[in-house]
Structure formats: structure tokens, C-alpha cells
Image (cartoon, rainbow, N blue to C red):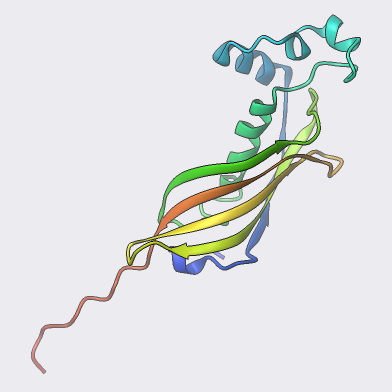
Length: 159
């Protein structure tokens, strides 16, 4: 269902997104962009001897690749076309490592809708980023602000 406005979102609405495979290039580019060259992410020899047995993706890389998957089914899959902004990401937990070659997807559910004014509303989503084995790797809450359905203008014409 295509959602136009805040009022089109209901508690319990949910989506499971298509997947996205995490590559070695993703890890190297993320390390270069952020300056986080931690050896668990970038040194294959060291990582092989670590508790993970190989390099792992940065937790933040998983978050920034996984969370926007909500927009992949179509720009307006779960969130309405009147989306104004993502205003918060809360309660993020990095539950399990993501390794090179893992394919992650996002599962989201609307858990709260709050009218802020006659023009805007807040949509709160619970999300889980999972890997190809359906194991949860990241959890959190996302808050999005969306526009409300415009008020109907009063017809001022004479009968």
C-alpha cells in the first residue's frame, strides 16, 4: 500500500526489505571515510586470530547501510510520501557481527504514531537488521516526521 500522509500509517504496519551484501570494499571505504581503521575491520591476519575468526564490518557501517534499506522496496514502502525527516534513531544495539559477504535486510514495524500538529506527525518504528541466516545483528528505534493530510479548504462560493 502506498502511503501519502502521516494518517495512512497504522500501528502494526510492517515491512521486510530486500537484502544488501556487505563487501570488502564497503569496509575499506567506510574506514577511509570515517578514519576508523580498527584492525578487527582492516587487518585480515589479526582478525583471523580474533574471536571472530575474520574481519567484521564496523557496527556503524551495518547501521548506516541497513537502516536506509527501508527506502528500497520503493521510496514510499512503509513511510509516507510526505516524509519530512528522520528525526531520531534510539536504543541502537549491535547484537552480532556482520562479516564480509553477509547479506543484511531490515525488518521494521510501526509501534507508535503521534500527531504533533495539524501539519505534522511522528511515526516511531521498531527495527531489526538481520543477516542471511535470519540472525539479528542490530536493533533499534527510528523516529520519522511526516506531513499530515491537508485540511480541506472551506468553499466560499455562493449556492
